[in-house]
Length: 265
Image (cartoon, rainbow, N blue to C red; front, side, top):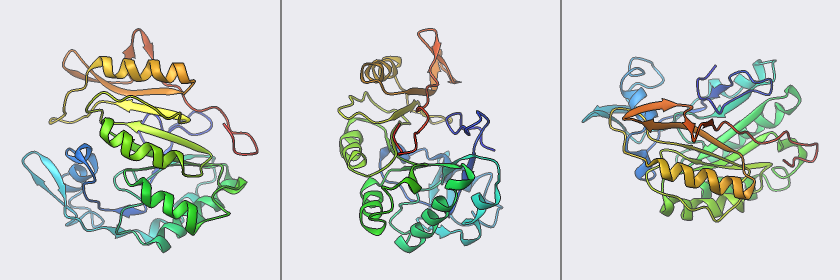
């Protein structure tokens, strides 16, 4: 199970992470205090799968740039019989440049096979161009059909520059659900695209960079105006990091609606 609050299974219980790739490299300024790199360099450094992938420098983890494919993990969801939501690669990026398209296709094939098990997969990337290339070309005619309606695709953005770079690519990528994660939020973000879901949160950890409450309020109001579910994961209040905080007296934990047989929200 995972403690990530927005990874929720269909019955409302916590979901799971499904890590088929270990290791990564920075894609933008949001990666400075990467949780995955810090985990690999500290708590995970004695685990064989993380050994040598990251080092701890000046109070934060730094990836070595090596990426390892976890062949042994490819069939993990097939062994879970209860309908479950899986967050794909919680500490890495399935669409990293060093992950072969052939391996991505194998992971995708596992997801397709899990439709009848009632599983849901949430895929988040900072490399939307590569995700779009895979979905449009490697799986043309398949990614848009009913067999992939349980695969949700999202991009991570941290400020307006990255939002402008990444969200329009996501919105042109076929998917049953497209979502945006504004975490860590490092600056105000104006949304010019209507996604199916928006997650937001400040940075965590001892080196976290500040995020203004007004930035989250603006996102919340923008989502309300566009009819987009809004999920506020964490926010700094009075100098302390608060998980699932109240914003104007409300805990914002909205989730996309159930998907119909045609794959629409």
